[in-house]
Image 1 (tube, rainbow, N blue to C red):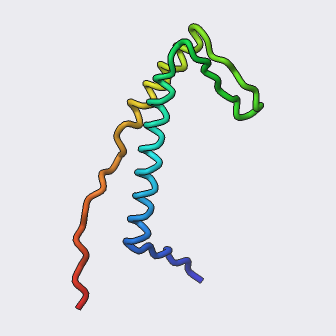
Image 2: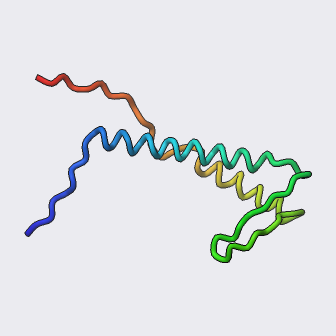
Image 3: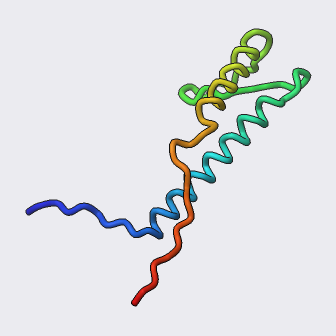
Length: 91
């Protein structure tokens, strides 16, 4: 028995693209928010493996914020651009 490719409707693809675009926008906003936390406020991160909370200070905080800027620059542009396509007339 041969396997068939799953069929994807244009609506499914549109929904997927919208989901990716929302995720991307939210992620960039989160990076911007964290990058703007004043030095006077605590910046804590959680180690996902151990659950341990780290308070970032001094050079460790500076390095973390620089890493955020690098991540933002790498992810600023999605590798695709959505385009509007007029629906085909059904005959």
